[in-house]
Amino acid sequence: MVRVRFAPSPTGPLHMGGVRTALYNYLFARQKNGTFILRIEDTDRSRFVEGAEEYIMESLDWCGIKVDEGVREGGKSGPYRQSERKELYGKYAEELLKKGSAYIAFDTPDELEELRRSYEKKGNTFMYNARIRDRLNNSLSLQKHEVQKMIGEGVPYVIRFKMPHNEDIEMDDMIRGHIMVNSSTLDDKILFKSDGMPTYHLANVVDDHLMEISHVIRGVEWLPSLPLHYMLYHAFGWDKPSFAHLPLLLKPTGNGKLSKRDGDKLGFPVFPLYWPHGDKARGYREDGYLPGAFVNMLALLGWNPGTEKEIFSMDELIKEFSIERVGKSGARFDAGKAKWFNHQYMQLQNLDDVSTEYIHLVKGKGYDISMDKSRRLVDMVRERVSFVHELWEQTDFFFEAPSSYDEKAVKKRWKENSPALMEELRSVLEGLDSFGSEETEKEVKEWINKNEYGMGAVMNAFRLLIVGEMRGPHLFDIITFIGKEETLRRIDRGLEMLT
Ligand code: GLU
Image (cartoon, rainbow, N blue to C red; front, side):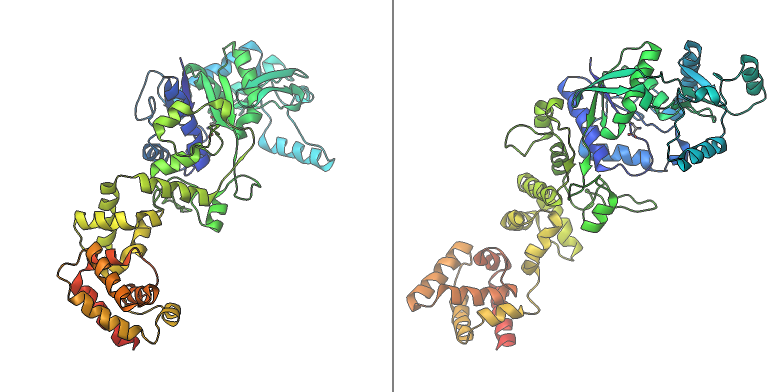
């Protein structure tokens, strides 16, 4: 039975790398008919940030990553917030003490700081480990009755893991293969703090065990913790889950981890949603990304389907995703590619949905249009844009006559004979009974050919009068949309202003 978990700490907005971790866990669970659990790891109260937990859940909702068991959903292994499980961890720390795998340490933060400094002075690094623990202030060096007395007096203490000396720890990772670390390179990590709270390591391993997690899929920044986690499973005598450590998301340059600063500097979001608290941050949702595009892009940052295919729906991802095809090395983020995905998704989106959004956009500019007109406009220009908000700059001239004429275009396209040509074109158009796109095009072209006028000379000058510059879709579609009256009005105004 596959049970996986996403276990974020609510310390701020969820980074897109975190969303990718959640996504890979979700895909893995769905593919194996397993369970996807959301566990909130909030035992470090000093790093707790108001609003972060809600932000995490809203982000997963927006991405379409559905939680099976979690804070909101409940489930057989709850509660799913570690702060609500805090009574439970002490018992497991006790168990390790009894088994001799952990010990009590009274060293104060000041004492440890001083040790650290004196080591540093000699160019060494201080490590609380097998080499020196017998000389420090703990239950391994003190007499039993001394320890009892100190505890009785309320002297603060922590519980540390007793990392064995010089032992090879052999591990397996689904992405990285076999890994070996010698225990002498590791220190005696604190498992339980003097404030009665477990540290990440203890709470994480205990909960993964109690929640019957079968596969731990998480960021590579947790790989250094793996030997300790292995040793903890060993000490408890529990079966271990399988582990997979995902590659980093790298800056666009490929040097180092993708950070908020990169996004601020280069103009892209690194968070799924807008973060409204404190150090505010832009989000993909508010920047106009479609959740499907965001998810698709994330899925391919680290996972390689092994084919040329790039567009994957969530269902396709569930079918085709595999941990074996996740790379070991970091995945470079490419903001241009993110936009490309959104462009693709905008083209695939249901026309009515885009048209509804477009009606809102246009309303914001002060114009009301029908669904039918909205559909026509969206259909005409959507292949030119990557975001809904970009539709306006492709269609503003349907609503607003040009108030000025692009200087460069005038210089290049408004020739000596342009006024005369446009006067004549005006009367051709005025004489037409019906003003459909195809008929007007046919009539105008016949007139051009009959008089042997240049096609470019007429059409460029005409576009300048209607749009104000050299852009926009098929000109006959534009004039049909704005209608005969408005077309003639724009010609008159242009002639007046340019001659
Ligand atoms: N709470 C850790 C985090 O914030 C979880 C790491 C893990 O998945 O074990 O990423």
